[in-house]
Image (cartoon, rainbow, N blue to C red; front, top):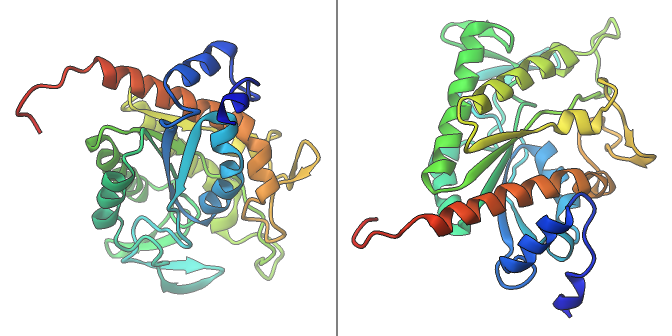
Length: 272
């Protein structure tokens, strides 16, 4: 039964953390609740992470990531050299995410975006991209708005860095399109780090890019396991599973810290 499942300490957890999870009921009726939001990279990562999440880490993942999640879905973008509308996967995120957070009541919200933010966008009468102050400030502002939705409901927040990608479509000269370059990914990840540092008690970064590409470049496999789809973008189920021992203990730690702070907080009568 479930009691048996709690005896072995899952990879990445210390004995003390494991004991704390057992005590808090995480392996029983009160798993650490994680809401996963973001784009298709995050969606596919979550599929692997969810395997045995409850059994090994006392954690449930509600994966509400979507295909084509651009935090600014109203603008025109350039993909593979073609101008078109932004991907509509998160068209209503400002209205929808508060409802999702209220429904799931997560201790931790984990957000992973960047794939679409890295495209050139037509913003304020000009074409801009990450690495240019006008667009950087805009992306940071969107990230802050998302974070404030999550923290408004008392959740802690984890931001994933965006992993390097290596799609097969290339420019005629053989070079990757600008939005697919490591330069853009690094620039976006700097914004993620900056925004997280503004609220270190409630927001932390998980270095997904470093986990998937430990040598600082795109890598298709991790520890001999094929971690990326053949499209050079998405994460295989096996890839998500092999990253679990690095990612899940962090989610547990953040969730447990939240549990402790919630328990300490006295409930005042009549306050909402």
